[in-house]
Length: 511
Image 1 (spheres, rainbow, N blue to C red):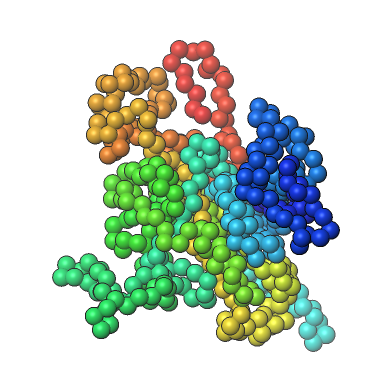
Image 2: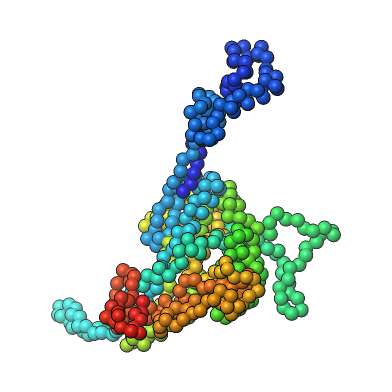
């Protein structure tokens, strides 16, 4: 919610009548101002009339202009105008959000902690060739011919809701990340840009290093190194983003081969400390020990957007999830589908996020028109968009501008530092010191996973992708065999509630 101050009649200091001060007269020019001692005595007399043990009595003890002068201005909650699309994304054309950077900043903060929805979609179809008899009237007589045609048969198409696997914000938070300076993204222009030194070379070992630019013996000083990203920078940023999404890494994680400064930044120092060594990775090839602070904060980007006068500008805030190896999980789901699928066609398996985008757009008729998908489709059919609107967005000075520099992250599984652990101790030392024992309660019991970090011992929270797949594997196989087709997401595994064996020694239901 956004707060904005309401208008209130101001009371000038000269309108307040203090005890012991001369009364206002019609001829203020002839009134002798009180001395310093008289003013001090008047203020002390006024303060003595205020009871210190009851704050509410302050208002009742003063009357008229005296109370109005001491009360703070009234505030009211401001609700920004926005609507939600069919994909759950938020779009706002609110005028206040396009003019006030503080309002936009607070709106993004309020929406950043709302969890997106995660869905798994499995689909497969195959082509079948069929024949049919067609009768035509030609040359005064009926002619019958046989025609062969292909028909697409949907074998299965279902959606599984995996949103409950996202950890609650109250447990792990939803840290806000900001794009790294060397990450090629949209920063208010029409092309991908970076905020880094424009010239890069490599040392003898092939590692990229920055060149110190000097002119006449003095450093070249620029307010910003923002420039158009090179082709290699765009390719590297695109490949890094795809790899991050496949492996389920957080945006601030530095992977091997990445140029330092390409990873995202985190503004809060306390949050950076909490996120260090929290990545859930079995490869050990990633580095989250040196999370960088941003050069520009989210509020700075909000001010820059509001100060821009482009007519079709857009600020996009992206929500991401991390903690699962989605690439390996997709392969496991595909394998399950193929083993229960009679045809040779490749099943399509994908994880999709809904409600992961917040778009802020200007409050004008052209921007609102382009936000309506039906009007946009009509503009394409009538060729108005490609012939007139697109050239205006692309080449006009006040045409298009896009910001994709910020977002929030939600964990599926991560390591959290145990507050009772000490720096430098390993897992065995921690267990011995805290007398922690993990007893095998059954074949499906969950063990607490611990790992040693420079800060101490951390515990894995949330369920791993293997645990989630174990719950849903039988359900996915059953839906494929049943040739299940539905657009309604399946929210619970089939047969997840098993009561037949309750009370038997050694029975542990799979849930």
